[in-house]
Image (cartoon, rainbow, N blue to C red):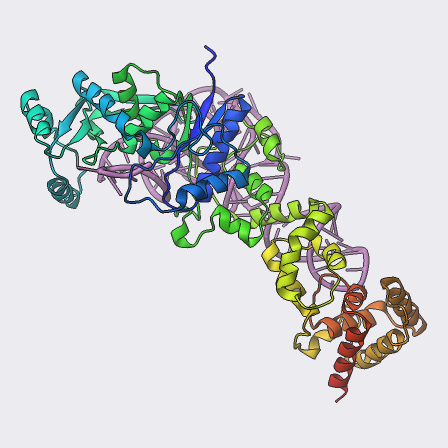
Length: 484
RNA sequence: GCCUCCGUGGUCUAGCGGUUAGGACACCGCCCUCUCAAGGCGGCAACACGGGUUCGAAUCCCGUCGGAGGUGCCA
């Protein structure tokens, strides 16, 4: 049977799209596209209390920014809508009642409060609370009558007391659980909305989802979902449970702990291509040593067999490395365009040549938000310790320092045309004629005009960027400072 | 506690009965060099542990330990 592949990404609008979520979306997208299938976005907003205003729009925009275009979804339409669960509210109850008819579910009138009390007591004693099926034993007549009076009720799944429930996962294989350990979950809440446990089954079926990709947090409840599919007589989808992304060995990635979201990373100056490439490899391997993939290439290379079963720790250093590589590969004009606002942050109001600076910076940019601090010295001469003008390896000593700086001053002052070639020529020729080492002059010169031990570019480039006047001003100040 | 799952260097991973256990990030050293970066070369570093099975185990089985997820009228 060649069933059309349809996958879905089904986030809850409870905040920004975190990286674990983005990775799930990515794998879901890749799997669908790899098999020429459809990728669907469905919003799971049945918990109205947790919904965060604006979160749905954030999901739309993040997915688009990442390039994960969905074929069907709330804002793009499709034949299986609506794609927002609260807008589907009316269609869950009939299915739940069908289950009640079949004996696979039952109405329950126990209140949340009394259940909470019992749950606490059991947990305090170190046990696992399980609903005791009290309302299952109500007569049909009594149940119907109480429902008719408007008494609040929920509908629970009726899990068999013996036997096992199981399902097959593409990644984890056969997962089995004793029914005796499974609880009678609520399917329809007192507010009439379905819980995730029910909505996911109904919607995946109604939307003809062929492959369900989701986090491993659903691994242990999936056997229960299969019981539901069986009760309805439906064919369950193929499941692919994805391990979580961790912040460290024991904590999940989460906004609450200050971990960056996809949007945060973009704002910091990480390229989306780098982020996508990085998270694709966080828990998945192409099976060889290849590291660089565009989204299109990922579609081509993706294979669920390359998915890893254990949780992966998010490693910022590696992301930064990817970002550095992607920045270096950017066409120069694109780099210039992207870096300009960051230059502005530090250099607004100066005449620094952004084009030349960008040439110098492109190979040294790891993350854009580090750029301002790297170039700020061009606008304002930082205070610095004169000691850093001395450098043993560069043969810049206390004795050589003043003569070296004065030589540089003498060589640069007469230059009428301030070009890098001329500066280079004047300096190199002069240094040679004076019988000095390049480093003896160039090291302290660079420090004297930048105030920094390391700079993006050498003394000649920095001097050119600063211009003749500013270069000589800074050089003169340094000479004056050490001769006094 | 109970249930389910997972376990290769610090991190991401390749490996699917026979390999000097491979690659990448990070880290260290050297070279290059007017600094830094990049680049080149080299280095440190792993099969969680204990039993089996087998001529042979990172690969298969069991146990222990460690970790994660679940245990909600949250998803």
